[in-house]
Image 1 (spheres, rainbow, N blue to C red):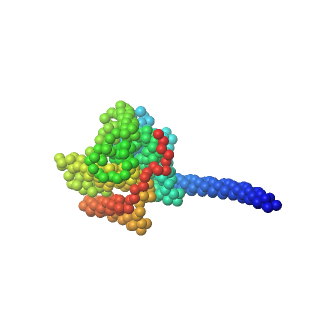
Image 2: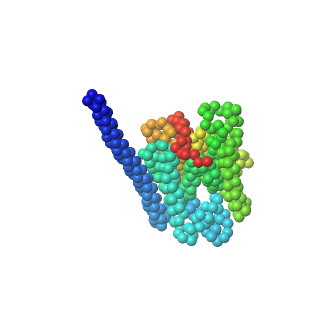
Image 3: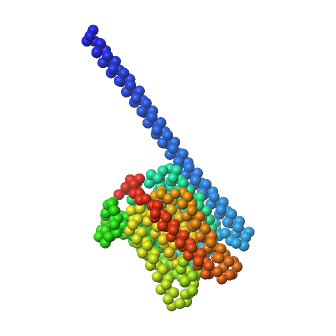
Length: 449
C-alpha cells in the first residue's frame, strides 16, 4: 500500500499535467488566432482608411476641376493655368506631326506634349484629370513609404493627409499645372531606392531629371548613399572621409551607369527628333534664364535693374554658386537619409534660385511628410513656422497685386517682401535642422539584390 500511493499520485500528476498542457495549448491557440484576427481587422481598417482618404482626395480635386470649368466660362479671371493652354497647343502640333516647339513658350520635354494628345482627341480636361491622378498617387506613395519605415499607422496617415488635403497641390494640379508629375516621379524613385531596387530607381530618377533638371541636385546624395562604407558610424567631413566615400562600389556604379544610359537614351531620342530646339527650350533656357518679372526670388530686382547690361549674364550664372555649395554640403551631411537630403536640397534650390514661383514650392512640400517623423519639433513651433511662411507670401502678394492689377511701380517693395520671405525660409530650414534626429532609412524593407 505504501508503494502504490506514490504511484497513484504520480499518475494523477501526469494526468493533471497532460490536462493542463492540453488546455494551455488550446488557450494559446485561441489567443494566437484572436491576435491574428485582430491584426487582420486592424490591417483591413487601415486599408479602408487610406482608401477612403484617396477617394476623398480624388473627389475634392474633381470638384475643383469642375468649378474651374465654370469659372473659366463665367469670369474674366480664368482658373486654368496659362501653361495648360501652352501644353494643349503643343499637343495639337504633335497630333499634326510637327514639332511641339512650334508653340512659343513651350519649354518642356516633348514627352509631356505626347502624353497630352488626348486633350485634342478625347477631351480638353484629359490633362487635368491626369495631373490630378499623379497628385493623388503621390499621396499614396508617401503613405506606403512611411508605413514601410515602421512610422506607425496613425502617423503615416496624418503625413499622407498633409499632401492629399493640402490646398496648394490641389489647386495647382486642378489648374492644369504639370508639377504633380514631378512630385510623383521623385517620390517613386525614392520608393524604389527604399526597396533597394537600384536599376528601376535609377531609370525613374533619370526620367525625372529628363523632365525637369532640378532632381539633378540629388545625384551626390544618392551616390554617397550607395558608397562602400555607408554603414560606418560617424560623419567627420575630412578629406580622407570624402575620398573614401567617393570610391566606386557596385551599387553606385550601377546607379550612375543606368541613370546616365537612361538619360542619354531619352535625351538623344528627343534631340534626334526635334533637334537644337529641344535642347534650347528644355534645358539651356532654364540655365541662362533671367526672369525680370516679379517673383519670390531675392535676385529678381537686381536682374530687373541690370537687364541689358553686359554683366547680366555673369550675374545670373553667379547666382548658382550659393546653391551649389549648400547642396553639396547637405548631400555630404545627410546622404544616409535620402528623404532628408532630397528635401533640404530641393528647399535650398528653390529658396536660392534666381526664379521662384509658388508652383516651385511643391517640389519640396511633397517631400516634407517623409521628413516629419524625424523631427522633434513641438506642434506650437511647427504651427508658428507655417503661419510665418504663409504670412511671408501674403505680404509679398500685396505689392505684387498693385503692380499686376493697378499698374503701380512697386518693384522695390516686392523685392523687400521677397527678402523677408527669404529670411523666413532660412529660419524654417534652420529650425528643421535643429530638430532633426537621424533614423536609419530603409530599415523596414527587405533588401532586394
